[in-house]
Length: 152
Image (tube, rainbow, N blue to C red; front, side):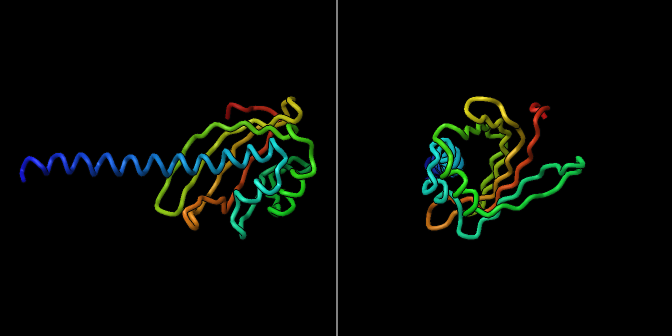
């Protein structure tokens, strides 16, 4: 029995690490699917990435240069993306921080956005996802947008 305990401990530690990696990978897959849907202009695929009660917000600047928070509806976002040509909306992200605790995940992802292959703007996406019915869905997305200083 004494010989089995160390192997059991190692097995359990490896199992929990594997589970955490699987959760992180599935969270990243949901976010990657969002950007694939944007690039493909696929409204149905895009809508499937969000919960029914999801919030979208953008921190941007008004005409006077003051920071403001703009609210968007998922339905409006889906309609906009569905109405553009394929390949127009190309958002390229880098997964920064990904944290998972049971059915809750957060992701910090710097991005650059290209319109028809031409740089448009950059910023950071901050996602909060929930696991519902064994599937990760985006509950909250807020982002920043700027034309330069993309290294921030």
